[in-house]
View 1 (cartoon, rainbow, N blue to C red):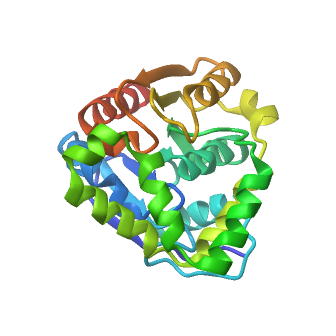
View 2 (tube, rainbow, N blue to C red):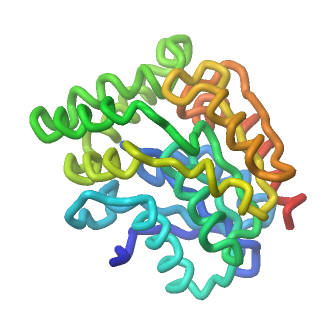
Length: 257
């Protein structure tokens, strides 16, 4: 059953629609650095909070990747959008891959960032589910900031680092845990050759959560996909290196159009 997710829309009413999908443990505000550049280039930006995150409902879990993708299709239907560009990071990227594999007519151009088609580490994700349900989101938030950013960025941006740490701390524990379950056994690799949308894969050179090798698997599996590695970028590369990520995304979506 689909969930009506919280979303925000900015940009010209007649612009090509681009949907931005957040990572686990974040909200639509993780895309703040990309909104103005996209709007300035004529795109109509639709950001949403993945179910169980931010201001979206927290339905009973566990969730599957088909649930997360189904929410996006329902959102597009609600907005009367037949097809859209899709940009996702981490869990958002996994959602984008599922959409491009299972609803290809709805995805015009695809950008997946700092993500994986088969994350692995099943037991780690299941352990994280237990941890969140036992101890809440505080310990997860403390650990996530070190995965999301390089230490040099954290040292140079202490206020932003705290805000983003708090973003994770304020994520509903059940929503986070249920999304962990969606990731635990995920394997989208066999279906990658089905993707026909023009695809850009961006990896962060310093991403310890999902290193560039994960992106390479996606790029090798999707016909004609482009692969870019951005230096001095950990897992939330779009926030750490906003100019380069925005440049790559906009260039690709214009070509896809």
